[in-house]
Length: 534
Image (cartoon, rainbow, N blue to C red):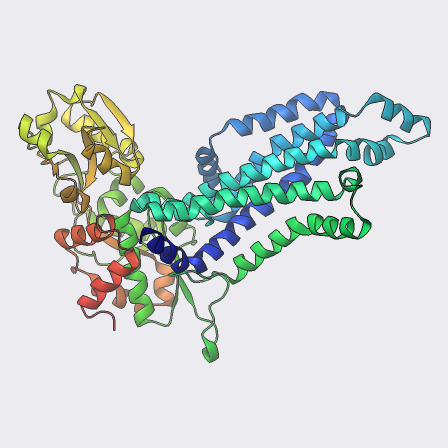
């Protein structure tokens, strides 16, 4: 029964699995190919110029020590782009060290007898390099390439965190939705892909080494050599076909927007942050636009945190995503929270003036942060409000999202407002945060008020008695250039205004987090129940 469910799940996702595999191969193939050209060239240079050897190997070694996510974040800031470009640059930089080091080691390991023989027959330095050193060093060089390629397949899964796609997108979604099937749908093909890539490169090396297959018949030798040598190219061609032609559920190809006789469609790019509520809001907006306009919708969900989504919006890489007024005020505009402040008016005015971005009408709910504890602990200790934690905070373990741990409307501001520190603060993914509290691995978390897991895990949000947290009314934010070109979007999305109160949003979140339904399905059902979809 369980096996049948898994098989059905995989078959349902096959079109998107095909696409994501193609994206993964594209990221790995392009980056490894560029790294081979650059790494082998630098390795040859380092082997011939001794004074450059140390600095070159040292520089690439330093690059290797930078954590993958940190590298992606740095390149995101440097390039000002989300998606493929920073991902490929990061993969190239990570691939350089094994290729360059093995090139240097292989060339330096060529026996002096071989070089003396080459010199004896009058070979020039260049002839010695291409006819003696590189052929003899080839097994060592290819070993470095294999290491780089396999490492690249693994690191490429992290590229999904910055919107580059690939099999990591399944893993990222699975972590955000606590869905193990999605995690495995990305992890298992990625592991198999690493083995296939490693085998194909080893096969190519075997095909160009006559001694390895001298005992085979000439006909069989020719066939096997041809297959082995062409295997990496066949895999690359298959990946390119999947990348160009693949189209998964809820996905519109970035290059094809055909509408038959009416010519190409205009498109709108809708993005989301990396948690359940954002996926649902993104789907609500996407499905309404698809239903009521002629626009094609490209979904770029699960991009990451606030600043990634905001930067992509300002740079024109996405067109719409759902933002929160308190987040816009404190995290983006860096403005303090003031009592009686009309937060929506402030962020709407500032976004329009600074970023040429429009805030549309709010959805209707206030997803404020809520310092949350277990119901059992609250009952035993009599905790009702945040200030009740003052006397015991130094003995408590807190689990916060990375954004909350750094933002002025998060933990740093909370410390100033309430005057206490927690004994230990651990960064946790939004999905793992609730489970960690339920398992008593932490004592306090920064829950979202509309999260369905608060009720599901029997948690208790504490009253913000000092009114530290600003209102976090969710609303679509859209580039005004897009709104001027397609004014119908405003009217379409205004249909959601006031439709989602706190309880409704909490219920929709629980449908995904608790009952493991897809955001697409939950959003579609909600729209149909409100007569917004046919």
